[in-house]
Image 1 (cartoon, rainbow over the protein chains, first blue to last red):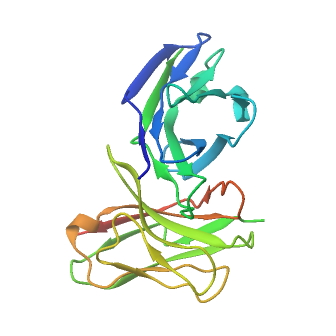
Image 2 (image 1 turned 90 degrees about the vertical axis):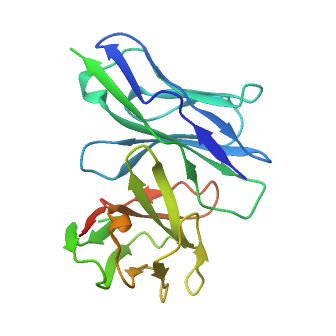
Length: 115
Length: 112
């Protein structure tokens, strides 16, 4: 079985400050890990993914995430938050050692960036 | 390139009625998925299709059916809608490798 936990329902940060959105995962084998962002009344947009190799993954809009195998974490980060980053963020996992192709999503974290 | 389109954008439906949500992709992806999004629960997989002609059940398949007659289309049918099926429904597709999924804009369905 595969699962994802996003322990924070909401994260508040001031514009210009660094932000972190937390994600931990559980899979039987090795993971593919993803971050998606959802703006109001929109579908999910792909931000970045970890497949293999470098543990620090860079994605769209200045976001990055660090894969930590020992802590089974894949936290999303950005050095300087923008008000326009305010949205709902989802972490997702897929076990690459099984035939299952569908992703398992976390419950989402709402990021609120204050001006 | 449109990516993934879904129709309708929103719908209010009486309980007991039959409803088909449409999903079309123009990326020639071989895999397609249906999710429902409910507050506090994230996205839950309803059904999936790894390739045209095959389908499979996800986490919450009861009350829903799908078909995959060709690569581009993956309709989701509610045979007899119930209020607990009130949700936002998202269709997605992916194409091999790490299977990055790309999502449609969603259908907001209200069952009264």
